[in-house]
Length: 460
Image (cartoon, rainbow, N blue to C red; front, side):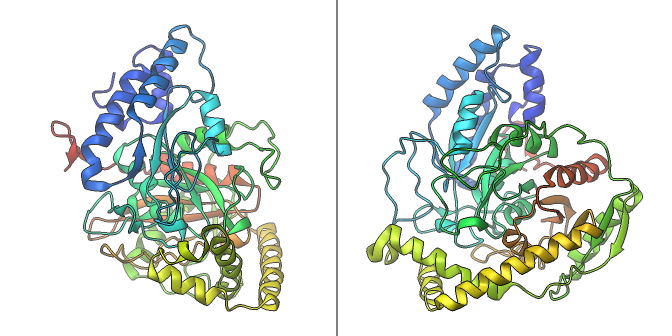
């Protein structure tokens, strides 16, 4: 049995359970202890219920002893970003403007995981209402980078990314309305996958509507696929959720990328990138070519869609004000207040035009993917900043507009020892190919894990 169960992948844990080489109770105790040790330093979790988690673990252990696991992830610890409802926990959304009353109903992802027998640990920290790419709030304080506590962890799924990096639960569920899974995954050195919109059902509906994707943050691609096997399911509460096709997302994961047509865009045609980041991404793309992919340097051919996102922010702002009222808005971070005031100045005509331009962008990317199986880009354009500043990841939000699957794949570290990632984008609904390409890179260059002193169990 491994000496440190907190550093074991979900896939490996399931194999240990099958062989009776470890138990869900042992694993849960180790993870809970690890959370308790590192929480004062990294503030990855908003709330944890150790007693409830251990009760779930004991029930899981009894099922495994009988050789009758309840589901695909029975006994595996999972954390949830605090934008998602989990029964028994408040959903604070990083904001003083929310209630501390516990939820009485699970979100679809939490419900599917509970049904599978997973151990629902608790809620990870988020940026306030998921609004910014920085997990630092008046309600919850600062969540620093998993590799260097003087640097930002990004957001808005910063707590989930840090938890995944530190071994505070092998499976983490985050959300991505403009890069909020992929950006923190990139800067914390973990794998972040944004499925096609609707692949994972969501409820209640998000303030940013159909930009909002739910997906995994994990240490391995296989773990992300395992998590998707459970949470990629429709739910009657979400009329936009996609039907399940019964797919096992780990199937063909190791089939490689030989012969795939991959477009490599260094700048999307309108961005600039730090030279050191560019060099690392170039090297990662050369690895894809070594594995037989056909790489072509080409931009996808669209203009910066920031004006579309700016106009659509009016809908988000109106929904947020409706939900929390003027009194709630008064409690928000001043930067968010300013963003709401700016967003609400957009006219109805401008919002309608933004939807039309979004549709045109989506159609253009569908045409693009008739020629190319995948598109790859950097994730970030600049090195990870110090605390207080959001990492710049301008490559991500266009693919929320188009609802495409996309992943942040760890590819190494810059000269300051901070993570850098490759962005892999697939055609809408072709999630499997994004996972497969991610796995191909990982197989050649296994993702680095956060080093720990095994005696003190604190970051080295």
